[in-house]
Image (cartoon, rainbow, N blue to C red; front, side, top):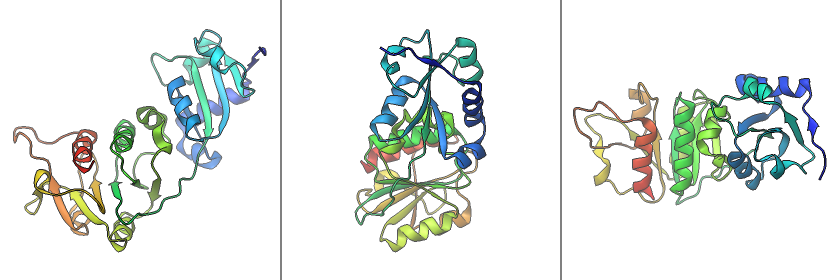
Length: 252
């Protein structure tokens, strides 16, 4: 078994910038993630590993010791990089991967518009994978797909479903409709229909809006229909990731 090589100061600095800086993730076309389970999931989906940082104390060191890209760090360095309170001592740098996004005639899609919380975004993506969604469209004014917390909440399943980033929400909706996909806005308005009374099966897309403001009037109007989840009237609204889970289970 090879002796592992300590990480260089340059590599450690690079890892810190990937954690904190979206522009740096964009310009380098790389992202960072933590946890051996997430790392292994990304590897299994064909993401290209660039570097792997593992502490000498990590119980997963032997799993990666023979990988030529592995570099060791101490616990102090780990704490300076990691965004986790309880890290398992593994951090990986991957290249981003371009997913081929094609709209299928009978496909099931979701559109995520202005989602701001990386945890919510990651949870929705993971849920969409579980419920066999065919593709996800994320508007450019949403939180970064490659934010470390987003990746962590997907559990590394960002390579299972094609994901497209659109600069313009209205262009995305128009593209779906031109492809004969019926688009449902999630909204509470006079025309919204209880989701339990709508047949959500094939050739559909469901749009989820910002956590605090939802979808605005113009964003709702360009959709074909509005749907809502019937809940206790004393509860103002559901968390967007919870709402997505309920609706996606019906689509499935």
